[in-house]
Length: 70
Image 1 (cartoon, rainbow, N blue to C red):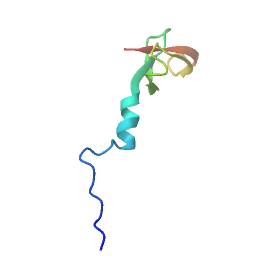
Image 2: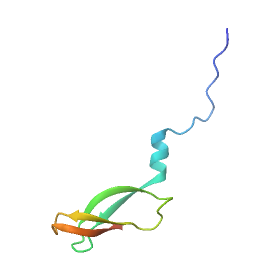
Image 3: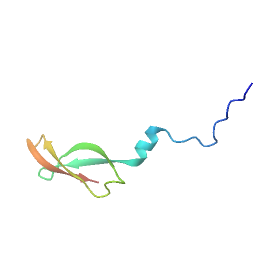
Image 4: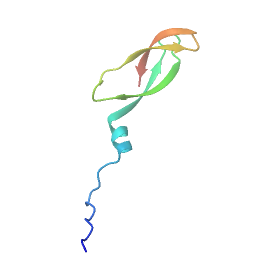
């Protein structure tokens, strides 16, 4: 009978832990009305600078360039 291999002392991180470590939560705000409309995540290694997306602002009722806030 062959003994089963033992588990390593430090187990590798799960996929969700790796995903959460590599991504950063951001909030997008409309520059016209200053409303914070969208919550997203971004890869902070690939995009360390602040991002801008064209999104629909429900308060202004038009597409505007939403910018990342702190």
